[in-house]
Image (cartoon, rainbow, N blue to C red; front, top):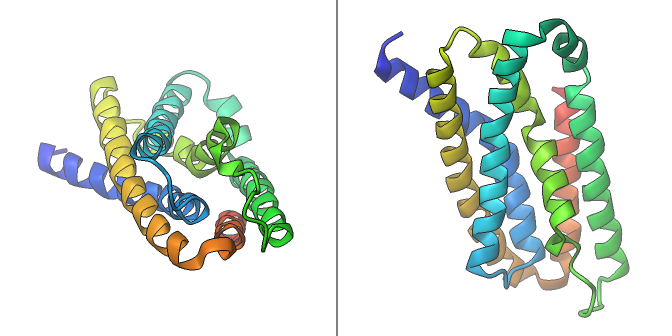
Amino acid sequence: MSDLFFIVSSVLLGAGLAMDAFSVSMANGLNEPEMRRRKRLLIAGVFGGFQGLMPLLGWLAVHTIVEIFSAFSRFVPLLGFILLLFVGGKMLIEGIWAWNDDEVENEMLKKRVLFVQAIATSIDALSIGFTIADYSLIRAFICALIIAAITFGLCIIGLRIGRYFGVKLAGKASVIGGLILIGIAIKLVVG
């Protein structure tokens, strides 16, 4: 495999994998339009980190414990569905209850919710370890770094878009963000 083909395929793989994280980032930006730069960097970094880590874990599984991982792989979409449905449903319900309440605690601020989102949006990247199984460890690591960087950049863009529309939509943002996460959850199990 040529170096150019490797880089291009890694970038395309990263862009494809990052779409769920991009959408969740938009939902986060919608939910918290006044989000500070440091927090946006944290969110994008966590999403990028998980998106980069999961293919490496998949690559490692292929090279060590294939039988166990292959049995688990059919449950990957279901796990992502459950996690995103939970977070999205919670956002939706809180948004409906707090439609006119400006003093509602912002659930998106909590780090545990961010980690659940990161795991849910990156768990499908675990199976990418199968597609990059023929890569050397160095190439798998470089591919994972490219995936992480692409995800980071797209999440920053998603957060900015979400913040822009979050200011415009004010109290309805949590409902819209919850619906986005539920939509992504459904997409995981439907196809």
